[in-house]
Image 1: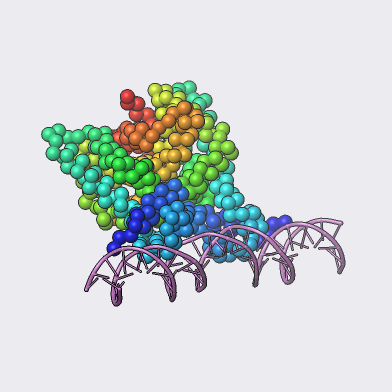
Image 2: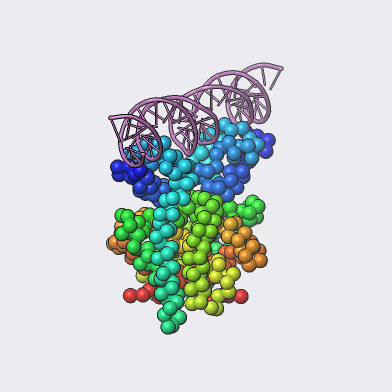
Length: 212
Length: 212
DNA sequence: GTTTAATTTAAACGAGTGTTTAAATTATTT
DNA sequence: AAATAATTTAAACACTCGTTTAAATTAAAC
């Protein structure tokens, strides 16, 4: 039933790299299949269409990350004291970095895919994630809201999307930014260092008192 | 020399709307010219290529916004007291909203174009902006740095790019987010309301003390 | 009014896209 | 070993894309 080196996996591995680098619509199936060293038609044979390939690429990461993130929320919730916002955000660092064990550069690729998907797919990815991983997201939103009870839920909605933009845009251009930072300031950061830099920024923004 | 209702302007007007809505590569010249009710070939005749059309669309806004933003920086600088970070960010609101006088929905379109451009164009737009409007950007960076002297310049570099991500991603999906906010919370925000929401978020993140 | 330049137009070009087809090949089952 | 199913392959299909061409039209200059 399965072939030699699993054509399906070869396609997914090649596709996720190219999608993360150059976006979905800028990546042709011919480029993917030539990098994966498989036949062009095998994408449609195994996945049906390009759109379903994109979903499969994302799902392979989300299926690992989302339950892991949920577990972290549960651990925090079972603690005796209310967690701080920074603790909640920091608890996602391990699930994110664990994606590097899954595949080389897994963390960066995942975050870049997320960013590309949110912007390119005209709301389609947003629907896909909320319908397939809604309960995991709710656990996160509840934890964050509990840590900042002075923020009304409508305001929190906006701030969490500001935060999504912060992390997703930063990661989509993390490589370019790291090059500039190295040349300009002699800094040499890896992906974890950047994540640890962005957490205080996001935590401060989410919890800042609402003006009127 | 000039034609009836200025074909060039009709193209720019139609193009900027479509580019902002669906991105650059997802918008075909045929769609632009049919909306603008001009001939397909007139794009190449007046602008040379699609890439140059994109630059012309962006430049039409940047040429207005950047000097106006610089003026605001100068005004703040000539004041007797050091401005707060929120004042500096807020001083950009008027230049942004003035784009609505230029064209209907000008503010939204400009910010969406900026977001699309930074993400789609693989660093090409970043280069275009820094080389063409670098001095205006420097005035802004200097003002922000002076208002938060406890942040080292390398850290400030990262935080300003976090901020770019926040604003740019938010605006690229502002329409979708406004629809959700209206359905979920009964909120009906215009672009100014969203900008005023994001400023405290960004200001808090930029100036939060560095951990160690 | 005639000539010259600028612009608009319809049509085609060449290249690239995702997808489908049917035959060839490989793997599995009986 | 034979029969059946799963997979791979090369080729073609139908379509869209940005760009170019050369003729038709409109505007400007003399």
